[in-house]
Image (cartoon, rainbow, N blue to C red; front, side):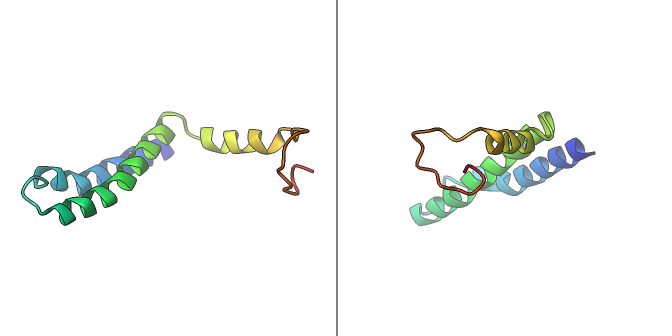
Amino acid sequence: MPRVLNVALAALLLLLVAPVLTEFGGKPWYVQVFFVGFGVPVLLLVLACLASAARPGSLGRAVRRRRRKPADPGSTDMSPERH
């Protein structure tokens, strides 16, 4: 079920951004800057949704692996879970 939800969310976000691409050329420069500023994070979110749909749970596993790694002796990281 999470795969279907992630793909549906990605499709919905693309549908929200798609009209901007068709009307982009005739807008003033400041409107184009706003569209790019709004569109880039949305497209990154679409990529994250599609990546999550392709491999559900991989982000959570990566976070757990990172937390389990022993501290590097030369590291300046003083977080409590590392020491």
